[in-house]
Length: 200
Image (cartoon, rainbow, N blue to C red; front, side, top):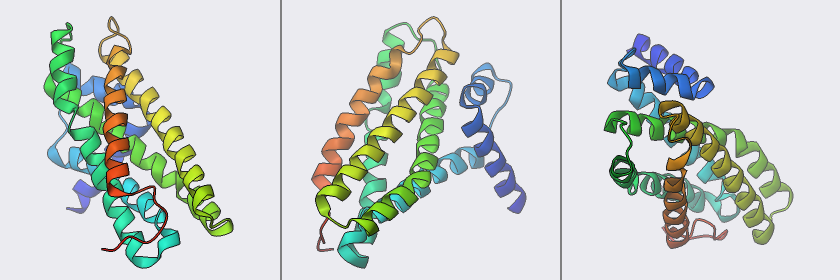
């Protein structure tokens, strides 16, 4: 188990450093990543969104901290998962020859990268939430963080898709607009950007 954990983390590190090469090796059949490598990538995404989400609840006390961590992960996961079949189907209809597994790996690597970016953003949110604990200001800080992470993830996903199918370039980026729209609706529904206690 320890060996698998170490190898899983090594693969995650490689996927985050060289996302295009990591995904290309799978698509070409040069490497077949075992299930625990996929699991490590998914856990990285979950860990990042959960821990960052918890910092979004700092103004509301322990209950709000736990609630925010849960709904941030749930909302982000649903926002990526719901439109994923549409990405594969519409890409195939548009002439893409990518397999379903390569498409899924591109999405998983991108979300894992986003989870790491969220982890890196925790000190920023924590500092500003503690230094200027005004709900409006904290809302703005989180908006900037989410926008920055979203743009970075768009760049990573675009680079991966362009590497997998150079002739199509970054065309599949349209899909991230759908992810963003669903994510905004879910975060609004869950009250994630409401910086006050929520009964749980």
